[in-house]
Image (cartoon, rainbow, N blue to C red):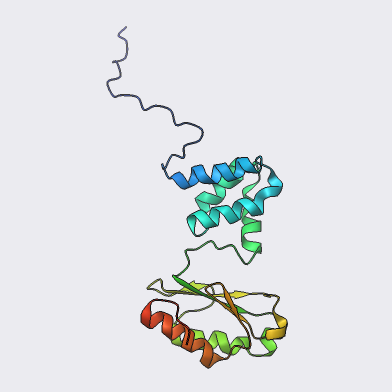
Length: 182
């Protein structure tokens, strides 16, 4: 009998445990964070926070990576990522507008703020404009009931917001592509 032909293609060196198959160095940085927390399952929120900071959002492959390294079921990682308002599973726009829809804000006009945003930016809550400039998000409560209705514009809380004032902020962003105070 004849032996099988010898392999002529060079073998790839094995991937080290600290290298992600994609070669993306952000995975190494995320592993450092998990190691700092000793790969503890109760560090899931901190790890998700670090992952979103590195990647901008939590894509499905990233959630799998975290679940594998923390030895957690994917359903638990996904459940935490979707429960907390801070985490997002989709890429966000250059600018973000988060409208509080808690009871105090809703009673004082949060629905009018959302409707005004929909008209000017042609975007629904949870979506990003087609040009990637603006994401409109909602939160169940921002904890700023005393200044209702409240919105968070690029990380800054604005209280007693009116549809006209909100539209002025957003028009500035969309016209100049930068955050501008009006």
